[in-house]
Image (cartoon, rainbow, N blue to C red):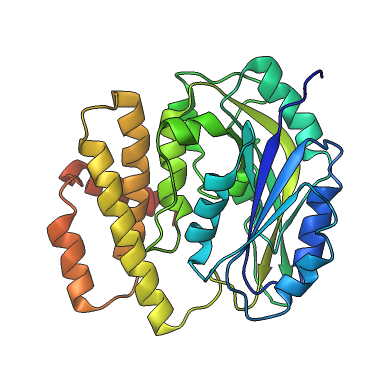
Length: 307
């Protein structure tokens, strides 16, 4: 492939001293070498910054240190500095297959794609947890090598998962639509990903396992203190409110709105199931105006079928 395009790999780092080296080596050793690796050190209090220093002799690494802003803030910093044609997000406690970019970039270029989706493989580290691997494997719902255009909205609605590390994106999709991560919430992918999906024009799915997702103790996803549960509830509610604004906007067509509504229903159903303070429950009932009686009946039927 002549004139290989630059790929920006964005790696937010916070207290991952045990894992950052494995992560960075999987990126540095990509068989596709036209990279800039934006490592955003987000105020770690462990030895992560020192571990990263060992890799700075690679001039493709752009090392940025900042006060702690959280995952969204770190990713936004990386996006603002990125100069590549394509963007890949990699969480710093995970790692990727060394052939990911060499196999996907030629497809992005040759087919003029906005986005490629691929599979992930989840594994546990130091904890007992049963993982639903189907969550990261889309072969049962997406057609490999088919170029999705208008039908991408329906396809992504049927097989929606939020993690941004499960797709490679043309940077222009993000910049042209002013897409960034909301910084006052957790579960930020639940808001960011549907916005990406409604703005793409072309998409392909590759049935290969390129991303290795680590489940570990003391991560945002595994900590379940009462304070964390409340923060999770509050974040999901903010996500719902923002999705509702998108749904009510006149700039999206029916197919795009159907995808947005699908995510709204998922968030709404999760909020109803979550344990929260009494005022939280009242908030759901009083402020989720776009959820109709028909939607509620659908969710009840779906819950009954899944028993």
